[in-house]
Amino acid sequence: MSVVYRDVLERFVKYREQRNISQNELAQMLCISQSYVSKMEVGKARISFDILTALYQQGWDIDYIITGQENRRTVLNDLYESCKEDCRADFLQYMIWTVMQGIKSYEKQVKQVMRYIEKFEYLKMYTSGIAAEDNAFYGIRTVNKLSQVQMAKMLHVDIKKYRAMEKNEKKPDAELLMLLYNNFECMPFETVYGENDLGEINAVWRKMQPQLQKELYEFMKHGLQFMNSQTGDTEV
Image (tube, rainbow, N blue to C red; front, side, top):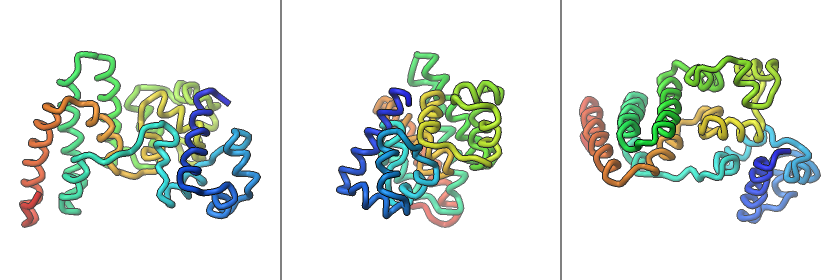
């Protein structure tokens, strides 16, 4: 077990304790034994994708447990939720494009900017339907111009297991999702699970300067007004 994965386990335990849930109660929630919960929390058993999914459905912030980064709302959530449902897919693409322009202008640290651009190129694929949810690994690998062998090496799995994950025949456990985040800075569970709750966009948004946020917000607001006006709703 890696040192970094110990941090995941510590957050897992702390998250459970903060909600006043005992190991036995968690076991009952997950339909597993208390001894298995105990083994998970000390790294003797894997926290599987199925278990993460069950906890996610109970309202747990899985991305925080894996990365330490809380999935907090921003003003972008308000904009997105103000958009008519039948326009949201297009508006999400518009939001991604707008934030990408901000990424290219707000920092001179080229390496950091390129990492964000790679991330958002994947988001564009994912949210446009080019990379379906069962091809998350394929989408990330394609954007980063990596072979399957290179991806397998970075995620510390053999090539057979990696290919199975890319085909959605196997799902990643918590430690593998942690490696996905460490290598590519993708909010791991959100990416693989297929939820679009703006976590990736918000993570970058919070790092931008307030003045740039204001400019981009106004730009997106005008785009939202235009999209909503096409369906007879101009409220923002």
